[in-house]
Length: 336
Image 1 (cartoon, rainbow, N blue to C red):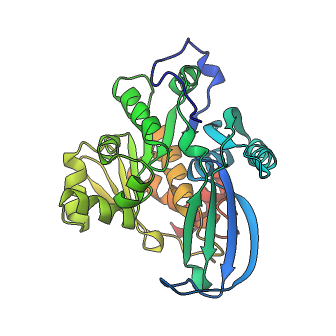
Image 2: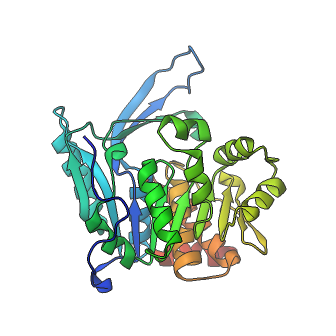
């Protein structure tokens, strides 16, 4: 059962004072963690030494990180209420968002299976992530969402959100019906196609006000376009595609920030890593805060975002240690 609505048709006016700095559109879910003796190879096996659950979803992680930095943040998402404990899990996900000061007025529910992730954590920090459930893929934007989106300082989404939702947001930014759009490419093209994402939608989204691309996603994106996957080839292609601000992330090796006129290298911070889950989402939120909303130069914005990501890695889970604004700034000052 889809979350049917009126596509990108705008709704009635809304007081901008009632809308957040950031609205994140996409998944909010339960993360099921399994700490393994080893990450299994094809046809291989492993043993789970312990397991637990937490809360995640890329879009929800961004909203929570922004809130922790002091931003007013909200979500548009859909939770499942299937017969196997769905209401209980949906209540838990929504409560966690509210406890983190994320506005949940546009969180809705449907009868399908709630979306979840299984996170397989191996020794040494390696991990695999498997996602299932139907609630996020059933999300569609409604007419009543548009005043909320239009009033936000920035709308953030990712390629794991349903293709019709991303396409609606891209069209809304192009037509000036939202102020700014930030987009995380999230995963490789074959994986995204398996989720129903059209490559043309990804191409259109690259011209958002901010686009973030990880190593695996960038390599796949370049292969899809027949582009040299080296940094230079990727940067040239993104600029030709109309990129405004881009971040090519490389985990502990840092990131490259790209504008139409310059590239800036960002170093990662050396911290005692407990869990890398959610680091990319924290980095994305930090860039939205500093580069898009504050308009800081890419060098300062990149350092701030790297600090947000690094500090989050010092706790367990996707939102294990999301830092305050002052904590992130202090880490940047310590290195300068």
